Length: 154
Image (tube, rainbow, N blue to C red; front, side, top):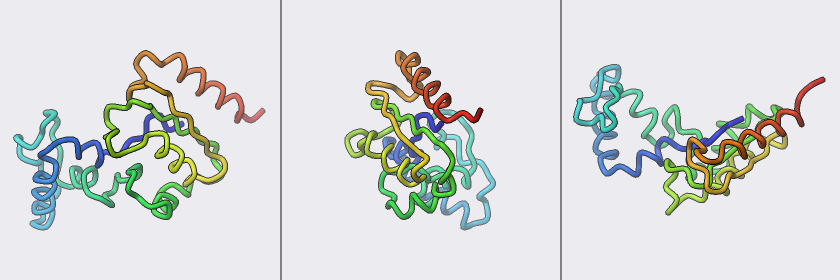
């Protein structure tokens, strides 16, 4: 079960300093300092992060760029196609605060992600659900339980 798969890169795009910080991370990596921590003022949430890790999250095609809406279907298949044959539920949150809803259709993205994983994958969007599914946990639990029971091996 992939619960609330979101693009870190697209989520970071919601912050005005992302591009400046990404350029800094690229410079640090080019200077051989990718393993060093980014300066404190770039750590908006207070969590220390290395230049390599920030680049992985924030750069298009970075190591963690698996769920971005601007990836082509071919790119998504390249990233997720290894899950073909594995029963997978993409459980998307319809009002996920980490999805830029002005530019990304959460339900369409969930459909594209499950499509990239092949015929053993399916998707469901929990309408109104936040990233943590606050207020929608019963619905999510029922959905996940039904999925597991449908695919369990006797």
